[in-house]
Image (tube, rainbow, N blue to C red):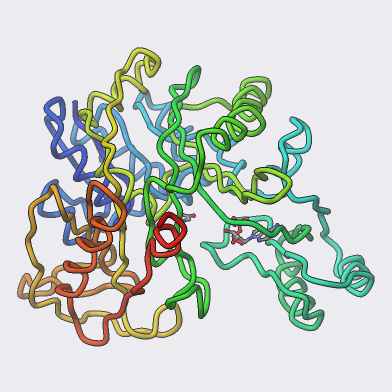
Length: 419
Ligand code: AMP
Ligand code: GLY
């Protein structure tokens, strides 16, 4: 099988790494890729993953059997619809199903229609109505941009001036939701579907704030852990019954089923689990923690998804824990320098540590340089969460470029809870 991975981050490096170990993959391409994917696959640079025609042209040129779409933007742009029309397989939703992520108004209506527990919300598209609502409310509330916002579309606050400024800005070109503020702890569940049946993967958690102890601004994600020890089997069963099953039933009823990943972002509250959001792809950095735990041949697994045969695939997952620590450029998520040389990348035994590149590229002398805010994902593996944490941090300390930084507490709140 020849596979093309679309995207350029650490999530896509992790997906490509998994394919690179597969016995059934005979050609592995990444568009556009990064300096890490270049090591294990053929990068096809200068490709816009949202440009369906460019993607189809590459598929024809290289004889690609199916495309694995990493990020959300190409899915929302309808790349999968175009690939299907051209007779090329894809792991990822068509445009209509991608609206479960690309329109929070659409997904909230879907959740209400299928009685899926979630925060109560109202949809607003007029500035006047928005001002009236904010002035009439007290206490903490949540405002969400309806469309894709790369992690920057949500504000939780009780400060009316801030809420008004944030919301009025969104209303210039989108609608928004005003949501009830939920108190609890967050967990993410990934499911893989072949369009008919689905399987549930071990739960993950990501760490969104820039600095230790959940301080500082929101980021694309500074770390992740998989599995999450505090999620009981009983709670997982409740999530399955109340949230995952009704979602797949609703998708089938609405013609939204697809071959690919559905991500459930959940808040575990005193009243039970509530769904915050769907994503229609792997999370980043959750994928970097989850993927190294998949023991089965990833190419065979994806082939089973493409063939609509997920039910009979014996997916094997390690019982280890993985902790992912993101190494970022100084200043991220604000202003940061690009093009910083990365002199040295340590090598470790894959059993203990895996390092994925995020924003990196080669300079004119073929040296690895940084190319964005989040530059590497260092993943520590271990039989328990404490060993995984130790392995991750021994390696994180060794990945250095000028002004690089990382959080020192990834996973800590979970083992503090455990001991
Ligand atoms: P979302 O993109 O909807 O997942 O929101 C991003 C983040 O905002 C979530 O991971 C939560 O940390 C927070 N958040 C979203 N909705 C709520 C809510 N209703 N109550 C409390 N926090 C929320
Ligand atoms: N880590 C959250 C996301 O990928 O949206």
